[in-house]
Image 1 (tube, rainbow, N blue to C red):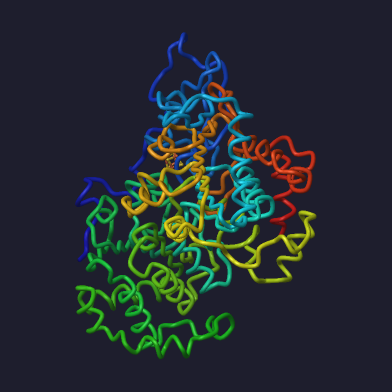
Image 2 (cartoon, helix red, strand yellow):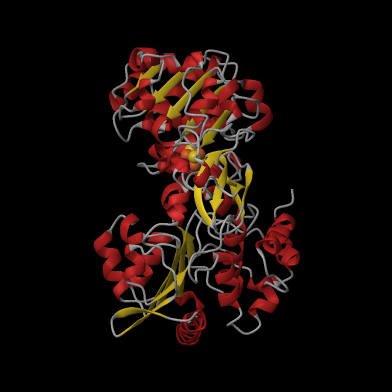
Length: 545
Ligand code: SF4
């Protein structure tokens, strides 16, 4: 199915006519509304990582505008970035710590909130062991905050039943990269969109969800062939040269089928495989079950189209495949990610400008959480169980090696199972709202009722905060500083433009202050730390190389 973008949109993205407004403030700002200052920062909504300025007037965030010098967005922001200042001033902000008394959440002092949580954590640890405490966090914190939280949870509280909501969206990409490449570091970047001559998008509606990436596509002078593989028609499928509307849940078969065709015709890059890959024989054996007609039957895509896709990717000067949640959150997502990697490895379409299997992230710091690890790995992509890496990490952060976990604890959904079984007694939820986002709501609600203590740390009065026993009032984007790592692993600085509203505190301060309620923990883990820069300086050492 061949479709031309201009047939659908009335203009051609390749003619560079698709531009969002460069004037991020949408017009002239009148004198009385003019900000007193513009603070350099980064958008905190999504993983694209656009550079922006926050306009501040009378100590309030009143505007945002794109940073024209930023390599990611070149001055443009999508509507979310353009309205981001509004979230700071939202009505449902939590402005004070809250403690549940007589069935109602009541305002409390920070000290009372910390004491209630630390006393309960200590009791539970004494009675049931530290692993009876679970922590679920997010891809929304700044890297310094996530690093500090993870260090405190694993080495201070000594529980490894700690996971992020990023597991629900990124676990497939993480494990797929690890399976294929040995490390979870995405190998693509946005510039690849500018120089690839074949761009395949699988389960990714970038036109709606990552619109800024289209600006990079528009800079491509090679007239790239755009292949969109997606069961759903979308704005992105409308911009394709070739739209592949495969049946849902058949992308793994499609990718295996493409590899079959490539090998069948000798289109693989034998030299690259010999130099860089192992397991090629086993792959060939595995692919025997995916001859073109069989794959056509499974996917609903005609054989001649399968050949066309395979030939395009194998024959490209530089082929880029990018995917998002359509792959990561799909049936057999991990294997699908590995199959994308296989396709790129056997064709040598990796490690050159424009050639990469590239996972695009969703949350603003999903990549930061992956780098900092603590859930699927130790910080700096060190694998659990790798004793050399464990020793190295312990020595850099100056803690006894024995307290560093050697294997992963329960994953997000397993934490909920463990609460159901009565194994986990206290849960600390940071910057995520499972009562909206977790798949099995009935199960979750029933499980949360069994807890001795539910702590929610959030900037907003979420559904989950409403049922908490203790609520830590957190600052949000624009009220705190640190860095985010975007999809392409660019580390972007986000600055504080205004003070946290009410009595809210940055997530960094909350973790640090809570840690001082556990004997010897702050002294061991965070000696003389007082600001995010202290965490960043340690992170620099931990992530070196
Ligand atoms: S594309 Fe993402 S990072 Fe850029 S402005 Fe929109 S929400 Fe923010």
